[in-house]
Length: 162
Image (cartoon, rainbow, N blue to C red; front, side, top):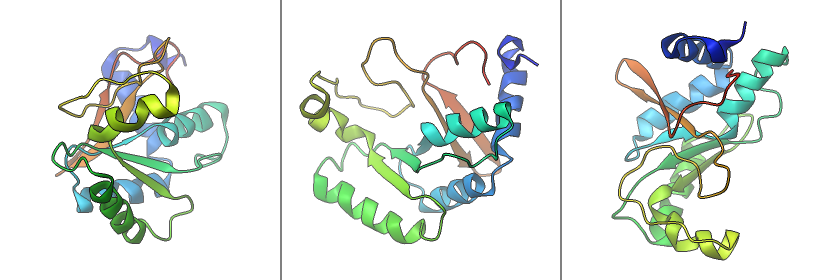
């Protein structure tokens, strides 16, 4: 099946089916929902790697090095504020087979240029998005809301998804 050619609602169903095959991902989502950071989403490699593993017949959690939790707190732009969240998260996410990496996306513009050599614009709201690189990689995030799991894409998923 080429899920990338399905209607969007069926692509989302295929994506959710792939994610449902890993118990760790469910634990991360449940713990993140309990912490309830502002505008949080689980993003990046743990999502793509899970889908890739399912599509290629690998164990769903193979190769997942961490679980990236992005949140957006425009009032907490200091390193100390982000570090306090990171330290609290170490307790909340303890015992997982891979660490949770928590980052405040509202702070990206403060460090991005020094690390990557190009400026990042300051954002005023969080939505999973690609970094300002060329070409932009697919950007995707998921979160739990009361009674529902929500997926958001910064832009259209790549052809061939999943």
